[in-house]
Structure formats: structure tokens, C-alpha cells
Length: 226
Ligand code: DX5
Ligand code: ZN
Image (cartoon, rainbow, N blue to C red):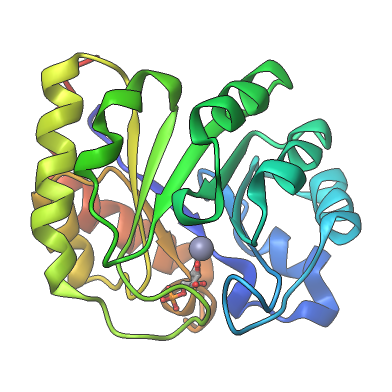
């Protein structure tokens, strides 16, 4: 891989004009859709019916990030909606291996997310069940927070484990990604970057995507599986 993926988060978009907001990021690799239930995180966003409409009009694939309790019960419905990728939180799943298999069997890429304080090591044996590992670089719940540098060693350990396994698992980071922090995250081994405020807070979102992609790709390590 020579280019990184930039997935803008619509959490920072205008929720009343979502269709137009999606058109503003048509050069992105995917749109990151943050689903929050006010239980797993102290914030509430959108549910499956709205996500289905986004799926119907989006110019780019959907990358859903489910910050919801009882993921085992609710995540498969998002895969059924035809989303490209569905990411659940490890902390919200009782049977993550079963759930990842369920998502794949329904045609979605399976992603699993970890809060900043959740260690990656207990999950390394299930890398082959995943298409993407998401390491949260802020506490999930809100956009516009500062990047947590304490997550960098975990990103490095995850990258080493992915490369060592030879399995093609994308390593996504989410939270506080800017033109500055993306370089540190990429150096640590991340190759898919979520950016909310850095894209939608910019005057020209497409130009912001281009700049982030350039910064993230400059230091990107070659992925072992490619
Ligand atoms: C936070 C969300 C993020 C958020 C990122 O819980 O998962 O996707 O939108 O926003 P920024 O890039 O502004 O930190
Ligand atoms: Zn997110």
C-alpha cells in the first residue's frame, strides 16, 4: 500500500443536509458513520433507518462505527443494509468472534474497535476474523477532541502483530486526527484515518482530504500482506 485511506466522519457534518454534505467528500475513500446510542457512549446520533438512507445516496462506501451497547444483537442489521464495513466495539460484544463471522457472512467487512484504555493484546488471536481493527485515539462519544498520544504504543503493537501474522487487516485510527497527528499515527502503523472536524471544519473538505492523504501517505509503511 502506498496511499492511506481517509474516511471523513459525518459527526462533524450538518445533519440537516446530509446528502449535500456527502457530496462534499466524494474523493474520500469511505464515509465514517458514527452510530451512538446514549448507553455505550454519552451521546446520541443516528440509527439504522438514517444509515440506510445515507447508504442509498452516498457517493462513497460506508464505514459504520457502532458505539452501541449489545453489539451482538444490533450490529448484524447494519451488515444487512449493505454497508461496506461494520465496526463494533469489543467492550460491547459478548462474543466478538461470533459477531465478526456474522458480519462477514452478511457481506460486510468486519471491524472491531477498542477504547483508548482497552488493551489490544487479548484480541490478537482473532485478527484473522477481522478486516479492520480500529484503535480509538480519543474516548468515543464526541468529535473535536485532542488526539491521545498514549495510544501510540498500542498502534505500534497492533501493527507489529498484523505484519507478523501476514493477514491483511486494516489498522484504523479515529479521534483527533489532524495534518499533524496523522503523521504520528501513520508512523506508528495506522493506515486508515478517520477525520471529522479536520475535514468538515475546513473551508474546502476535498482539499483537506487531499492534504491529510498526502501527510498520512508520506510516512506510511508498506503493508506486509500486499
Ligand atoms: C468519536 C467518533 C469520531 C469523531 C472524530 O467518538 O468516533 O469518529 O467523529 O471526530 P474528530 O476527527 O473531530 O476527532
Ligand atoms: Zn468514529
